[in-house]
Structures are given as structure tokens and as C-alpha cells.
Length: 170
Image (tube, rainbow, N blue to C red; front, side, top):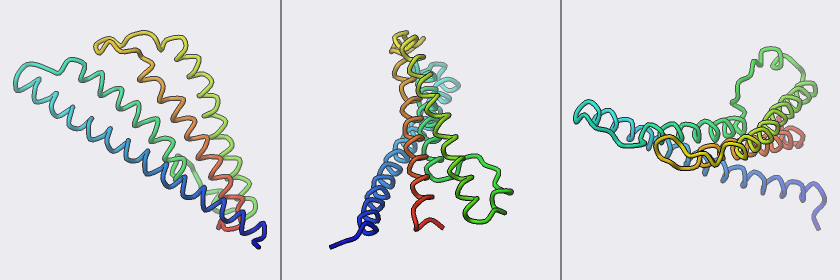
């Protein structure tokens, strides 16, 4: 019969697996968006300067894809602990105070993202039905990624806090 430590270890292993899969899926979506952005921009430039024509809505679609890559990329970066940070002072701290500072850091990031979720939902409710200028699709399709990305960032923050508090954290 296993003890609580074994059960906790199994739960963390499941969380690790979920985090790994989620990160790979998000990275795949980001890479796909960047490939489409790259191909579309090359095509738009060739069409514009080579044939004096364009793809209607191409620029608008590129902007939407950039919004998706930014929102999802910001979440993934938090999950990998590669977000913007000046760690010179934190690196000098002993282990226990450093863990406290890291937890405060991730709680702050989670709080900011939670506030962004609230405000972006209000924003979407107010302007999401308006149609985009060229593609004539509801702005909701571009805007929805903001609360989704922020929500994923909050989940990554909570996961990082669990890692900090787990005994295996170094």
C-alpha cells in the first residue's frame, strides 16, 4: 500500500504529462501560425510587386495570426520560466527566500493575467460582434485568443507554484 508521498508523486507525474502535452500542442499551433504568416507575407509581397495584385484580407489575416502567436507564446513562455525577469538579486538569495520570491512572482503574473481575462471578456462582449474591415468576420475570432492565452498563462503559473512547493524542486 502506497503512502501519501507516492500518491503526491503520481499526481505530479500526471500534471507533468498534461503540462508537457499542452505545451507541445501550443508550440505546434504557434509554429503553424508562423509558417502561415511567413508563406502569406511572401505571397503578398510577390503578388504586390510582381503582379500588382493582392490577396483580399491577407494583411488582416496576418495580423490575426500574429495576435494568436503573441497570446499563446506569452503563455508558453511563462510555463517554461522564460518570461521577462531580472534575476540578478534573486539568484543571490538562499533557497527558501528564493522560493518565496518565485511564488510571489508567479502569483503576480497569474493576477495580471486574471485581470486581463476579466477585462478582455468585457471587451469581447462590447466589440466582438463588429465585423473586421476586410474579411468581414466578427472580431470575436481575433479577440477570443486573449482570454484563452491569459487563462493558459494562469494555469502555467499555478503549475510552476506547485513545482516550487514540491519536494523535487531544486
